[in-house]
Length: 190
Image 1 (tube, one colour):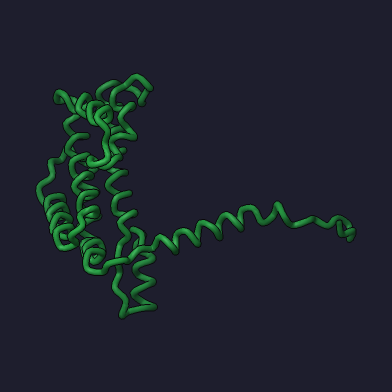
Image 2 (cartoon, rainbow, N blue to C red; image 1 turned 180 degrees about the vertical axis):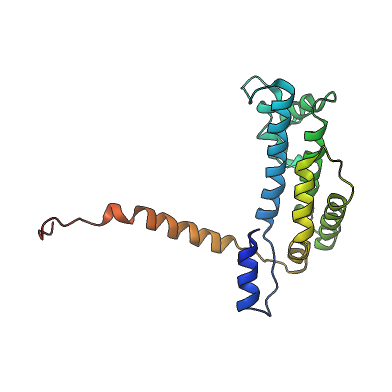
C-alpha cells in the first residue's frame, strides 16, 4: 500500500481482517523526497540560486539517493566533498536517516531490519531540531504510519509491485487507446 491514507481507509472498510502493509518503495520514496527537499533548500540558502551543474550539491543529487553500500569510490568522494564543512550539515543529517532506512530494508534478518526501522521512527518522532524541517515532516508521517511500515518486516514477500506494474500497463493502454481507434466521419467508416 502506498502512503495515501484514502487507500488504507478503503481497505479497512472493505477488508477489516486484512493487515495494512506500507510498501518499502513508498517508504523510501518519502525519505528520498526529504533528502531532495533539504538539498534544494540548502542549495538556495547557501548560494542564493537553484542548482547549476558546477554546484557541489547539484552534482551530488543522484548520488545522495544511492544506497551507501552501492557507492563507488568516486561517488563516495563526491559525497564527502559535499559534507566537508558546516554548510551542508542539514543535508548530511537527512541523508544519514535515509541511509538507515535503506539499510533496514536491505537487512537479510527481518527482525534486525525491523529494529533498525523502529529506532529510526523513534528518533525522528522525538527530538529533531527545528532547523531540520524535512526530517520533522518525515518523522510525523513515519510515526502516523509506523504500524503499516513495521508490518512489512513481519510478513515476508508482501509487495504491491505486481499491482503497480499492472496499473502502469493499464494506464499506458488507456493513454494510447485513441491512437488505434479509427475515426468515422459523416457515417463513412474507414
